[in-house]
Amino acid sequence: RLVAQGAATWYFARRGEPLARLLHAPWRNDPYPVHRQLRERGPLVRSRLGTLAATTHALCDAVLRDRRFGVRTSDGSYADPTAAAVDLQLSLLELDPPDHTRLRKLAAPAFRPRRLEGYRGRVEQIADELLDRASERGEFDLVRDFAGPLPIRVICELLGLPPLDAQRLAHHGRVLAGALDGIRSPRHLRQMRASLTELDALFEDLVEQRRADPGDDVVSDLVAALDADELTGSELLQLCDLLLVAGFETTVNLIGNGTLALLRHPDQWARLRAEPDLAAAVVEETLRWDPPVQMTVRIAHEPVELAGRELAVDTPVLVLLASAGRDPAVHPDPDRFDLDRPDRGDHLAFSSGIHYCLGAPLARMEAEIAFRALATRVPGLHRAGTPTHRPTSIIHGLAALPVTTDRPL
Ligand code: HEM
Image (tube, rainbow, N blue to C red; front, side):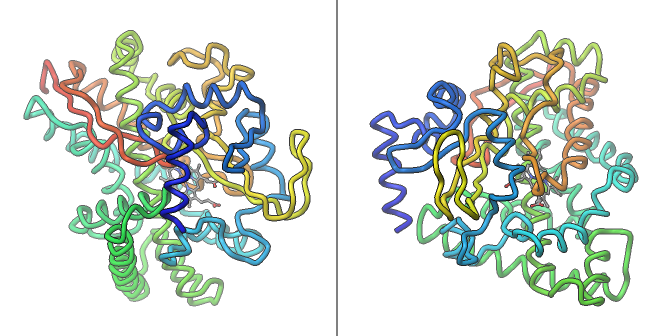
């Protein structure tokens, strides 16, 4: 069924159906002209495959905040057939209240900005180390050598995992994040099952270690909650899977997409080099202009009237977060990448409503440190080849960005 669905989408993409095009290369590499086309059709569009999509900032935000929408269908199943096929459960992302509220309360304290500040020095140190090592060679791949390893090392520290596991984790993260787009082949399915099994074993060990020797980390918090019967063992493992995947499969793309945007806009790159405090502005403008998570989905839990259409119970609505960031009603001249725009923070890259990204303060801190380090440590950075995009649509980012530096430090 999944293969047939994929084939139908491809067919409609070739015939010019914009929603289907968002899911396929080459439109996937630069989806913004397709987003514009969709927005011009109205705030809520319906594809020839019957899919509904919210295209404007106002409607996306309204759907995400509307408690008549959730993430599960009325029979309790999660909307994503791919996830169901491999029993991939991404915890909070796939739960409605009251389970969502209970679990989110348990994980939230570890992500409060004040607690995260304790990691700032360490994140700076990791960023500097990675850049120094990469730039010694003069030419390097910004994704493989910097944007990728930084968030992995940070999430390992946050979860209390030894850095030795970083390469394995990167592999599992890619496999699971790739699954958000659908299963591409029986081999992909086998890889996913293997990754899930290995991750479960890894996190089961970690739980035992934290129980014996608790620390000031999120897993120790969750183990205490487990022992107080506030969550189950499988809920804990699923939450760890989510933190791992969400923790680096998104942030790598924020750093990668932002760096590419800067290198394609030399005037903005010069602004950052002259004023490294603009790093926070680079983070927000990248999240608006080229966000790592392009879309999400919500299901009507009751009959709803939305933008003049009657939606029956269980109707899914695609929420085009990336289109919201280019909505001219909120962002004048939306296709311009501009660090000085006053509206840049007004995006939905971290979603909205009860599923608003729990890791947003961490992602912002990591990316700000990354852009500042680029501006101060490798000011001569420029492109050394053609960037390649990942073959995914929901997660949008680069597989490789070859760069070189004029003045290695
Ligand atoms: C949820 C984006 C980084 C943890 C979300 C959602 C989005 C998002 C769009 C909500 C999806 C929906 O509404 O259906 C991003 C982006 C990031 C990022 C663009 C980086 C640039 C992180 C990091 C972590 C994290 C670093 C943690 C280590 C989570 C969690 C949720 C979530 C736990 C689920 C929240 C809930 O359902 O209540 N993220 N994220 N994210 N994110 Fe992030």
